[in-house]
Length: 467
View 1 (cartoon, rainbow, N blue to C red):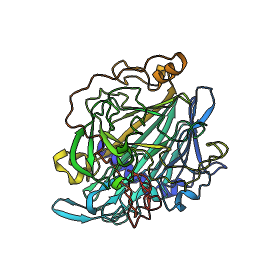
View 2: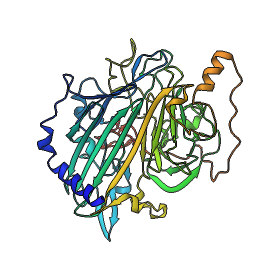
View 3: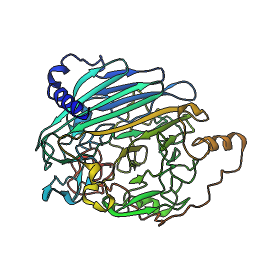
């Protein structure tokens, strides 16, 4: 069965150019799929999600992901924040731009300071994918990554991603194979959210959202450049990096802590979060992350087969990117500002190919006769409505629900769960996944990079880039 799927994947990708001629986007230049509860729009560049409309508490359609109204900005924006695209063939960072595989050392492009971010400046989020299948509720994109196109990586890779919608759930399924040589493969969907669509008149910042990661008490320590050090730390309940102890903690629960300004590294310049949280001991098909907003009433629940998530709070956004003013923002608010969004990326351990002690090599190296797979889904609902998903935790209320009750009924604050056992309680020392660097023109330039000098990619004015 696996052999058949591999042969089909290679064949379908190889002939994708011819097949793509049968599929044309709509008048807006986008491919649209829809269900009873969602409308999603895509473009081939980066296999990118451009819009995702869900219903808010007033039954209004809200575009909850970032992007551009002008589609030419996706390839032209020098910051390249990797808006809702598929970076590859190895997402996030590779330490010092090198790895060793089968006794041979490979050097990759250092586009994030001394590190490689998302496989360099010709990664999959910079390329046009082929459209190989389209229906009313699904679309499939494919890419052929020949040896040498992803700078420094061995072998050819064939990959496809299928996006589908059903009810209020958006599902992402990725398959890839490397038929010629063993090569690193670590993929993700790099989705940026603001569940208020920048329409909250009180604030455009993300800190009033609630983020709950019930199975993620531990996270990877990172250096000032957002590169994992190898250490795995445990967040104490209520500490700066804790999202596991209570479902009602605001995302910015430590925003007034002096350590918050440099919590994700860059020698104090990266505010908030840019790191990797492990998902551990989660039941099968459990909701492993919930993002919610009391203003819109929307909650988004993540299920994934990946062992962790990258959380990046948009510290490297600096007001250079325009909002999608056709669907987002209010009068006088037209730009994407620092700390106004969050990227949540389900993936394997960043730089795991250089950390054998984590035992992730089998998952991160794919070779001939092997099929790489990745699956995640986001289900959208309303606070107080349990129909969006199940298994968020131990009987705790929906994220933000307590906050709404307090505002309406002036209830006492929700108690946090008693402190669980922890290894280390680094509150400010986990620089998280990405510190701004200047050479990353890619998407994460604003996200995950510590300010560096050459960041053509995704770094905000010297610092744009993400995980």
